Length: 344
Ligand code: CP3
Image (cartoon, rainbow, N blue to C red; front, top):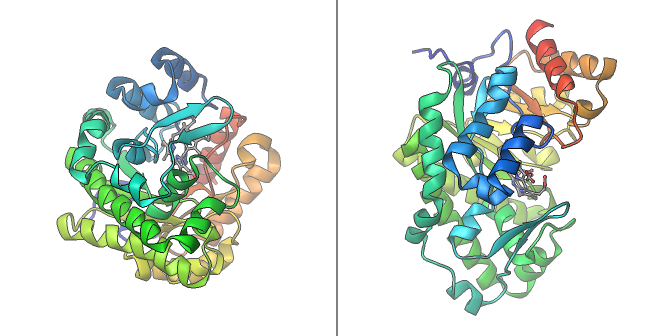
């Protein structure tokens, strides 16, 4: 049975003549309408927890550009907050959290069943979107993958090399493993509620997968994503999963089977011809234009976009950036990328 929605067709393995397109961080600060709604909400977290305004910013890039998918507006760090961590955002710097590095701190986290008290507004956002999105637009729910979420919970902020998480892994493996297990369990519950509310696809963001080496990559990036995917498949066999082990490099090959996901999202450090040969041969791929093209535009944007569409035209492909769009991007360049993908 074929479905109308192009994203779902690509996720089912179809190579479409024009790849469907959406963009990581498509609701974001590069859009004046996003900045206006965020100002109305007061701050970023108030926006995440206000279902009407979170639905509004999710819809803004759909109205402006007609993307094929909408991604729920929320953040991967809402899960640590729902587990009891303090979370705040420092303007111009990024997230800050209370840290978990000891058994005593781990013991203070809330049980997984309690996360829905905090996350209920997110589920309400999903319900609003399921009602209001155009019928051809796919609704994507998401969560951070356990390793990436743990790096923020351990360090209390973003870090260039995830040093504190690697240190805890080396020095207190029991606490580290227990933290990952707790996040994994919470993520299964969180994504199940998003699907119950109307998410049609879910995506796992493992933004810092690339800093895991050798056996650690398998154990802390792949295995937790596989566990989450398997638990979701048992309950929702028809809901496709997109996994993004960013920075995996050569290890993107084989990731579909290792995780059990329909789609692997790739970053811009690998070439499209390599991806076509070694990743797309196992299923749908998503990506992977350099997000800097959304800042610089020009002929290079058009040439690179065309080359990527061409290189990945032999199999299922969802066009996207290799990472989130940045606040300094020009909204006109986004239109140019879409026109190039859709019009040649
Ligand atoms: O993609 C979307 O449009 C959906 C919403 C979304 C956001 N964050 C909104 C957001 C998604 C899917 C995320 C994922 C996320 N959040 C990740 C994984 C993807 C990645 O970028 O690697 C990570 C690591 C986070 C944690 C996070 N949230 C950081 C490190 C920051 C600060 C950096 C920054 O860009 O300012 C955020 C803030 C954030 N999350 C913003 C948005 C739109 C900007 C906040 C603002 O409006 O001030």
